[in-house]
Length: 311
Image (tube, rainbow, N blue to C red):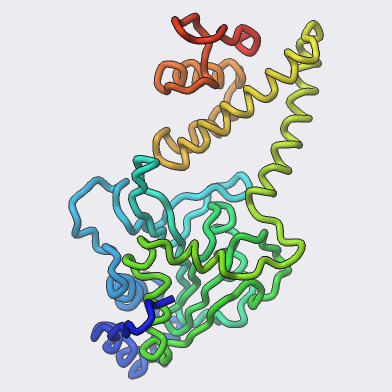
């Protein structure tokens, strides 16, 4: 929320956008006006007014852009592409970190009453562990809390924490900017706001859901390893299962943060010798990262190397 006593002036660009939409809204809401035109004429200027470098004026590689169009996020095993991903550099990670998504529909789509667009946005953001994200067609703007698992049968109002029409942008600009301006997000506005919201009973956060998935993976992997390696004792079996899952999780996080090539792990499923090829990635990680979970060779000052999982 805005700092006490501070009033944010509405940018002239926002006033112009609202007036332009008002004058020709019958055309903008028609089938003749598509999403690409909407982004160019309304959404990109709206994003720029919030202080984000949507036009990539700042120097840097494509993977360092603050605003990434058609980002890639894995949703239920498939790659999906949110329209806009807003990122800031995280010094602790040494890379760009997503802060929120914006999904765009053309104005002929009913944002307030449409169930699927809301589910689509919430599924993207939930999968990426983003607390808050935006669904908009410029005529309407909905903000969703996204840390609870979305369901296909959810009503469009479920988890919606803000709904505005274009003619409210001027009077509500201070509230919008206090959440989504680059300056505000840099100061942690979205995380603070998400923490201030009461969590409903029974909500399943993405981290809790992940723990449930890991438990299933452990069981399936243990059965598979035991079937193929009947000589393993219980301690060695448990170690193997945990080590393999830890290594996969580590590399998957590296993919998500742009440190490793995206989808590299998933592409292993497309050929034979899946584990042998996976272990090759583990060995490369042993050489690349100073991490205790990849340790397959004797080294001075380190504990015994793993001689179980390479077999």
